[in-house]
Picture 1 (cartoon, one colour):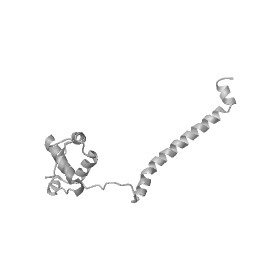
Picture 2: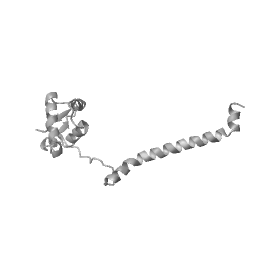
Picture 3: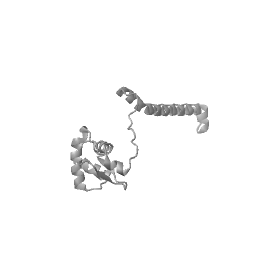
Picture 4: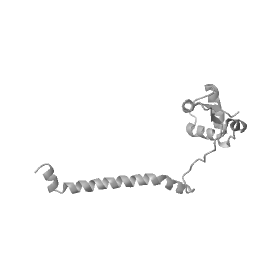
Length: 136
């Protein structure tokens, strides 16, 4: 006995359906665990919510020029290091190029540091896809 007849005779169809259900159930369970995982980590860290950055209302160019960038004490040394890189690159500069140079120079966590400097308005977009340095 061969082929479909052998499959039917030995309960092959039922075994196939059960196997498909087991795999599908496992994949659904895995996707649910992955979806809930950030919430569990946030609860363990103690804040009860996943961390998100508050959005800042859009400022006009005149408002941006009036406000002085507030440099956080945790990034003052990074500002000094990145100011050297940017003076070497020239303004306006490209963020991918700045990240590349920072990585080549061995600076610690360049993506996170540049993100902090953008949030502190040390680095600001020029509206044309490049960025300007505003920490003087």
